[in-house]
Image: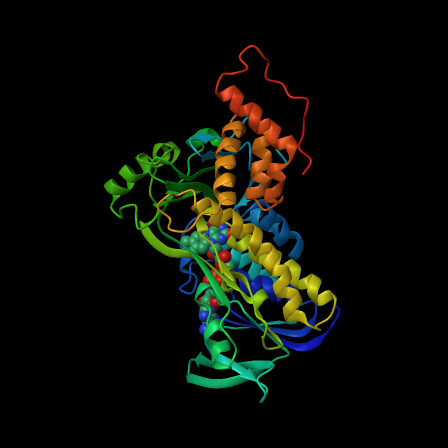
Length: 462
Ligand SMILES: Cc1cc2nc3c(=O)[nH]c(=O)nc-3n(C[C@H](O)[C@H](O)[C@H](O)COP(=O)(O)OP(=O)(O)OC[C@H]3O[C@@H](n4cnc5c(N)ncnc54)[C@H](O)[C@@H]3O)c2cc1C
């Protein structure tokens, strides 16, 4: 431990807050996490994270980063029923009208685990650190500052206890806002005389409908997941993910106000109308273990804290409070884990100018995930927004890449590495991949009929 100050406060004890606190624990004598919920024991759903009832996929890069922060956690989760997954061989990916190559194993590893179990285990590991304190059932009212308002030095909170509710103040050398999409940071900053951060939104108005089913060994011929990306003709999408306890979690939905119905018959019909049929084939006969549950989310939403010229010292914003993505791409927890690693790197160099350095590094992480989510959403013609020629070209190229990836393992893996945040999107433009994309599309068109399908390039080094 390399102590740089005494007390850090993290507001919010969801994945973002827990992962932020993990980074801080190596540098602050005490880290206090403040959460408005009463936290469930051991791993039930909770009110402050309503999305925890819906499918949560953990990207390969997120699994690695969380393991780096809490060594051994993957094994602890698999011991509780979470499933290790080969993201190529045991997962069916339907995108742009076809399935990615699936026939052989890869070293792309995922972890299938319900969101409440993952969060509970991360919380347990965090609380096992000697300098972490959790205060539940408290609501943060605002920030405390020095008289000149250049420095945040704590928070004001209401703590609900058995004998009443008490307002109090808590001082700290650093405050981190990890309160998610509805973070009050822009409002709090404005009240202190700062500008609000620049905000960008891509309106998607997506609607999820989720249900849990009992998983039988014969379902999906033993595969562990299917991901149906938003695809023509109707841009409907969905996932079926194996979870601990021999369960499937199924989430399906639509864009721009379209919702799967919340009655049994309508839900099944919607599943049948999707661009791929696997989910329907499983759930038409599977035993439901929960009610149908809706969720809607209007936008991809990003705040550019890294661009703010004036910002108080000793204050950071983290996780969904910086950027909340269209969840269809499963990026939020991975981005929070990568922000935690970035925060650790920044703190390793001390607390001087921390906010500038952290927001710059977090911005780089968010940039990549944002470009994947926002650009993909712009494939949907009805999503209102100007498309630059570059975005139109990229989406055209991706549709060609997906065609090639149906029979080319190298292209399929290169795509999955990018969508799992293991490699930069630029890697897909590398000539090694671009040539294979060209070849795959020529094959699809039946042009090189007489030529045997064989390329000199064996593996993609990206
Ligand atoms: C429907 C849906 C599906 C998703 N699917 C995926 C997926 O498949 N994969 C993935 O990686 N990500 C997914 N995400 C995103 C993921 O849930 C978040 O990125 C992740 O939870 C990290 O967010 P966070 O901790 O920053 O904020 P949140 O999860 O929103 O947590 C905020 C926390 O702050 C607390 N809080 C709020 N205000 C206060 C206050 N004033 N005082 C005290 N406490 C407060 C809340 O109670 C809560 O605990 C999905 C999101 C949604 C909405």
